[in-house]
Amino acid sequence: GLPSADLPRLRDLTHDQVFTQELLPSASQLALSDTATAELRSYFTDLVHQRRARPGDDPVSRWIATWDAMEPDRDKADEGVYFLALFVLLAALETTANMLSTTVLLLVEHPEWWEKLAADPGLVPGFVEEALRYDAPTHVISRVAAADCLLDGVEIRKDEMVHLMVGAAHRDPARHSDPDRFDPLRTPGHLAFSGGIHYCLGAPLARMEAHVLLRQLVGRLPRLALAHPPSWAPRVAFRRLLNLDVTLA
Ligand code: HEM
Image (cartoon, rainbow, N blue to C red; front, side, top):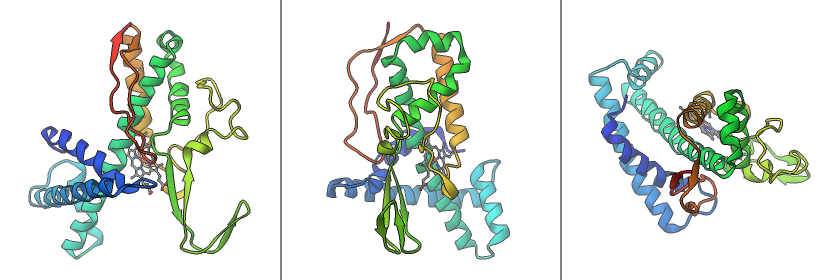
């Protein structure tokens, strides 16, 4: 329910905000992230106040009603909705935009799949799952140890942070045979949406978006070819294609 005129600005702010989740962010990246966080905070705080004053038929208004039923303190309820709205924007936008771009790049790089998907749209989900394994949008998942423990022979003490490197897990030859080969017919299995209690809430939506995009692309267009090799943002945690210029093949 956000005004569509705001979307380009929100997208730019999201690109900057997620630097805070990088593995080794530079001082200038953290400064960009701080500025973006401050602007997003004021944007979403205003949004919650506006929706409280004039509720509509949108998720933020419904979240306010839900929180009000649980929390008598209006300021606390507003803060809860603010965090939720901001988190959903950050969790959904950067990851999904990147997945859609990467999936199209992999299709363009494997042109034989253009005709295969057009002839049999039933192959689309396998293609999307393999794209999520081959080049996951998020490469770092972090956890804080609740207690001292031993993880595969490594001692981890309570309150220490552990980073799971998703890209390395996805290319583990003990788990995936010939892991550097892009093969949409392989048995699916990946950690792109994490696992356990924090498993991605938006996974079905993200998958649906990718399925629709691929089906429409191969159904409507002739093959696409790369105009020139794309460039990637210099990041580890959140992959991001900076451009994807294509021509009709
Ligand atoms: C390809 C797209 C996406 C990817 C790769 C992705 C990835 C992830 C990952 C790895 C986590 C877990 C983080 C952890 O375990 O600490 C997560 C959690 C989450 N994601 Fe996504 N996500 C995507 C799209 C979306 C979308 C579209 C939404 C919302 C509409 C969304 C909402 C969330 C939420 C709310 C959580 C937190 C769940 C929890 O902690 O209980 N995600 N996502």
